[in-house]
Image (cartoon, rainbow, N blue to C red):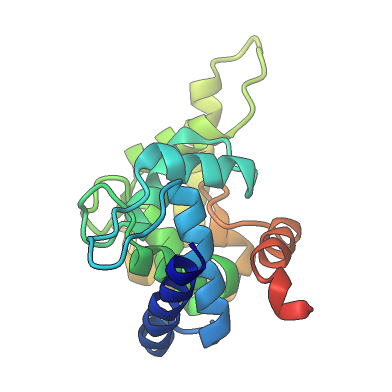
Length: 214
């Protein structure tokens, strides 16, 4: 058993060496910790020589929900899609580490790209009125009111478009989104919470990187 864990440690160190050169914001030892966390989340040991499976939608969503407090299904699906760069419905170890580098420590520009991708529900490189409507309807607390709530959301979509649709074509391109957010950072998560708050980032990093602090 000790032999196995020593071998695993060697494999993890080699992997971390490679991945830390490809991914921003994490040191080699932090990447090692993230690989271990990935293996724990998979719930099965990564056997050297065997292709490491990835996190499926269910496992990934439970991480987003339990650790980062996300509750919106539509947004969680968008986050999964954004992490899963090769669209194979599994988040590989590399996708996990690349995704977390932006999710936890990304620059504003990296976060703008990430949020835009999450909100572009059908992947056509535009956030349309319909997409905004669905996301806002999903993320706003449903209060039973006398008025038709859909009308209020439609108004909100129009207000948002007026503020963010800089080329006035009735939808948001990446350029529109980027410029609007750079002018007003609060618009980054205009259509739903898809980034973790400071507290959950600290909790996650303390949990994953705790051995580095000792």
